[in-house]
Length: 329
Image 1 (cartoon, helix red, strand yellow):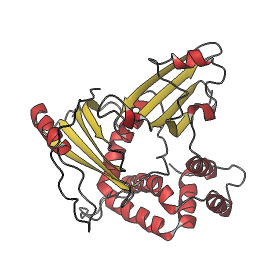
Image 2 (cartoon, one colour; image 1 turned 90 degrees about the vertical axis):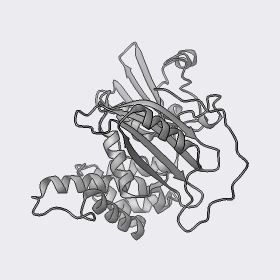
Image 3 (cartoon, rainbow, N blue to C red; image 1 turned 180 degrees about the vertical axis):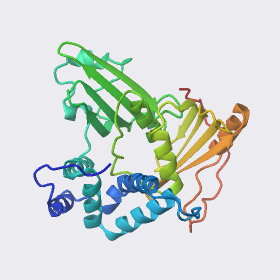
Image 4 (cartoon, rainbow, N blue to C red; image 1 turned 135 degrees about the horizontal axis):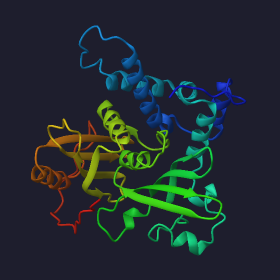
């Protein structure tokens, strides 16, 4: 995603750095998108560089990118903003900074201003498009303004009567002078939501800022593969355990339709650790049969996320049997 921005102020990175400070952003806010942009750059550099020897474990693109991104993040806001501008341009960088500082809802974007409240509320299987709990993480509008693609997070999912409710939402709005159509899909993981939008014509979205950072290089690689493979994976089963403490575990079983997939049943386990580390990690496991994947799915939900390195696990509590229901795609 090279920088092709020639907008006013695009040649003044200091202006964007000053804006980031004026908005009271923290370097941790920009860590996520920077990791993903660094990985995209590493893939591009690898594709354009002749291979002279077999790469070592530390030379693979995700490891190179993760080290580079971590160094930029550790260097502080000035280096982060300068790198972001070099990759996506001044306009997109400024939009990212402002969106991070002030989370938006659909109402804030004004996409449905010309529609009556009743029409908006009954659209897309009774999705309440004016709910303040739907926070916009990323938004793309087509050049002709006929299509909008939105990546949303539903902060109210934790209170859903359905155990294990999905917290992410993809929304595709198409319209002409007199009519509109709104399609949406809930997903358990952010990259799966991105893939759903890609399947409907959305270009790659800039990874949202303001959230936790990926904990390792494998997480970035897995997310990139999922988000950019809209026709490869089928969501079979998922469950999100969010007790409201900041530590969340999401498990999802995918069917890999790649013809060369040796283990077509994939189990994804995402652990988000907010209070201590403000990071998240995604692990991927391959299984030859659906039964093996389902058994592993249940096993991972039966235990809480691992504690951060250097911390002892909490003392065991009395056993419980939560009313779990699987959320099928």
